[in-house]
Length: 217
Image (cartoon, rainbow, N blue to C red; front, side, top):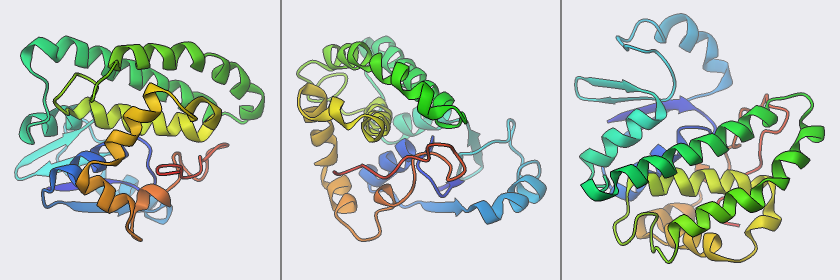
């Protein structure tokens, strides 16, 4: 399998975490900002994608774009898809986390970021409380089985943690994130010197708020 995305965490990091956790062999095809002309000029519309975009995943003859489509596909492939009774709850959490991530991106790329972040942070008490209540005692988002939505939830919570660390000092969400970090393959990666989760920015370096690494702090 080959996953391709920019050299940042953004929308692809949950997929990277899934693949790291799975132990599957895969290629991490990383594009730097210097590769932008190559992507837009040579790759994007010449690789046979139905909806050309980044990230993309190639698995044999299958070519997939869109973060959620990739995450769901890998969930089915890697035994990280919810049981039938949990699918609707999974999809609700998935969409909620994407809403939070989209909201963060909206202010992070805005030149008026400093004046906008306060109102966004003020809403986190309620929004994070909803997530904490949903997860409950866990140990994972849907109970005992870890699923693809855990990696979306963990990663996008970590983006929020970088913006507002005061919301992540203690409590059930902090404990949930620790459980994800302690998964053996992820812990090994987080502790390694080549862990890009600790070095890549959350957003593009060109964003008003690129977002400093915060994965294991």
